[in-house]
Length: 193
Image (cartoon, rainbow, N blue to C red):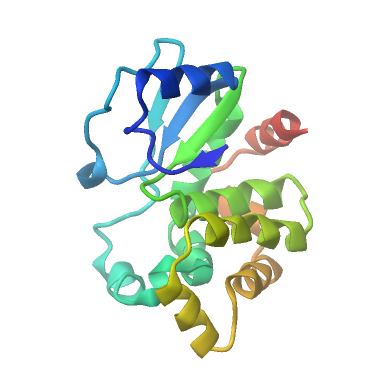
């Protein structure tokens, strides 16, 4: 399950999450984005903190965090090629998580979680069009008019970017390059089926 930050959950919200079957929470936020939870997390939840961004790589972020393209999937391919180990760690954590559901989140539940969702779905063999449609759910729940206008101005859409990213990138090969083991890839696929 992908989500926005869970730190605002109340006791009832945490209880609903556990009732829904979630047993592991993977936090993709950077250290400077962390803060206290509004209510205590249930003891039966494991929390794994795996920042997806490598914020110290200013060469990368000077290019990708300086404009509207950051709030789009335009940077996903560059991120996967530059930091395959970051995504590989997240996929490994999902594959090795305790039995039960896994929730991964960032701050808004759109960009980093969108990238991880795209990767998970691609590795599970979901058709690219369905992966793009899944990404489109972010646009419905978290509309970003600036990002949408930027993509329109550049002659594309978020769905087209996701499709072109998947067509031009061997996701499994990139993650293997980042350290994803074949048995963890098999474990992930088994977990999702």
